[in-house]
Image (cartoon, rainbow, N blue to C red; front, side, top):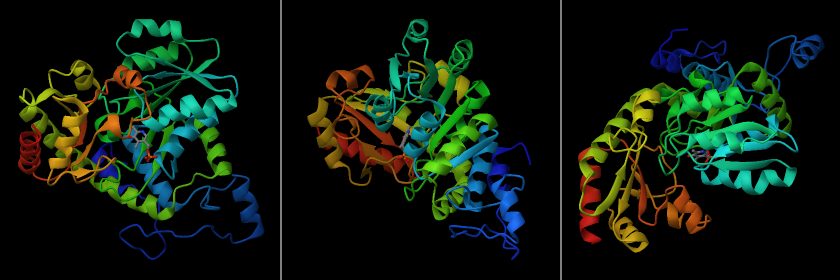
Amino acid sequence: MSQHFETNSIRISSSRSNQKEHSAPIYLTSSFTFDSAEEARATFAEELQGNIYSRYANPNSTDLIEKVCAAEGTEDGIATASGMAAMFASIASLLQQGDHVLAARSLFGSTHQLLTRVFPKWGITSTYGDISGYENWDKLVQPNTKMLFIETPSNPGLEIIDLEWAGKFAAAYNLILVVDNCFATPYLQQPARWGAHIVTHSATKYIDGQGRVLGGLILGKKELIKEVQFFTRHTGPAISPFNAWILSKSMETLGVRMDRHCQNALTLAEHFEGNRHLEDVKYPFLGSHPQHHLAVKQMSQGGGVVTLTVKGGVARAQRFIDQLEMISITANLGDSRSIITHPASTTHSKLSQEERERVGITNGLIRLSVGLEHPDDIIKDIEQALEKSK
Ligand SMILES: *Cc1c(COP(=O)(O)O)cnc(C)c1O
């Protein structure tokens, strides 16, 4: 196949029937037949390649995996029913009781719950490190540390972790480096290039792009994926063929959509920087972002999320949100429609105020997932809401 993201995302497709259809059909079937008892035996024994049962693999999920693997530069992968199923399976399948995970503090809310509430039940513990001082991380490694888990840019703080540092650090301590690449998408950033062994995705976000279906991906080196595959085949977080079909179809337009998401987000960030109603505007490709140098080193564009910190804390943030006329109030992101979220009172309300502050979630912080509407209309809606919420 070609080297280019755009072409691979459109042209890779192994799921064609003998009907010569031009576009991929949906293989809405739970199992697959064999021509003989011998073929069934050989397929189960993995002497023959072939589909067995959709909990194991399905042509639609294989299509999706092949496209995202080509984009990430990874060898193999698994598609799951949601992003969290992918986060869970990547940790649960590769670690065991007594193992320890080192993670960057700024993690997606449910990933934080997994590490602090779910895995300790099975004797897998974790420690958080702060990205403000990489020199302190050596002290956080324990004899039983097996995995380094990071997310960059982080949700919703938009912190950027140095992937080159992470790759070298993981190699030095023989850790499995897992990177949740959801925010950047494989179009903007490929963690495997910097040494990530496993790359995970919530495909629900930009890969879907219209807020319709849930899905997740676990990608990486063949030998690790084999281990994860054993786990997922027998525990059952398989993606539905329909959702895999939607997501594979969405990969065809991920590049053009991300170009526009990023262009709109940068336009908005530049427009609102210094606005008198705002304490802060954060976007990885703004020169004022604290890790701007890293963002431009490891990402081709800044992504589709901008954070705005309104003056006046929670009350003002909520007044502002209530005055929006077009932008949706919802917890999702990566949609064609612009979305606003107030993390302190919703997605991150379970964290204590202190925990929130440590990951940069102040009371006035607003996460804006910049959609594909005309940027002037998004700007106009925010401006009128800021004005009315004074
Ligand atoms: C949404 C999200 C997840 C979880 O994905 P689901 O598809 O909602 O299960 C994990 N990580 C990040 C960074 C996310 O934004």
